[in-house]
Image 1: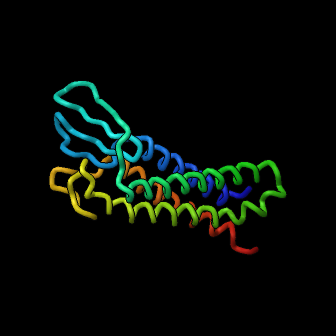
Image 2: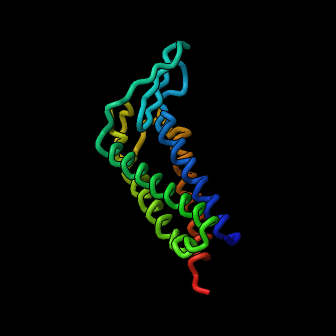
Image 3: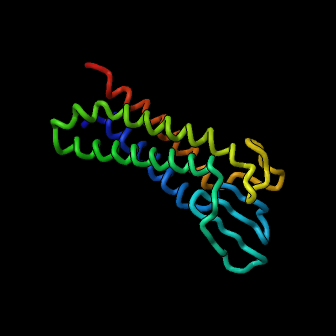
Length: 170
């Protein structure tokens, strides 16, 4: 396995970890930022009221966020398969021909993540947020989970650049 393959594999793994962390963390949207703040995620919603312990529930999500969650999960699966094929190609030399086409799997992850990034802001009208599509209210900001998700997109793009060098004939 050459250096470019190892670098692209590490970048895909980092993108996969950031995407998983973004889904698991309930801080996609943060309303308030003070006592009584609400953090809304794709799998749970947490609220802290006047210094008490945080209470988390599974929210009812708008269809746009469910669609985004679906695309992100499919992208995570695609990146995980990509990383798995790279690891297998290290021990099984005949698998290297499959590893050369891993850029296809990575590009599918990128398309899925970008679709989720485009669809997610449409759901800002949700009752928990109170905004309009693509426009958050003044007291609301995107949280750390959204930043992790954007980082996963970035690492997928950079990983694809390295994987593209691996796929060149020669």
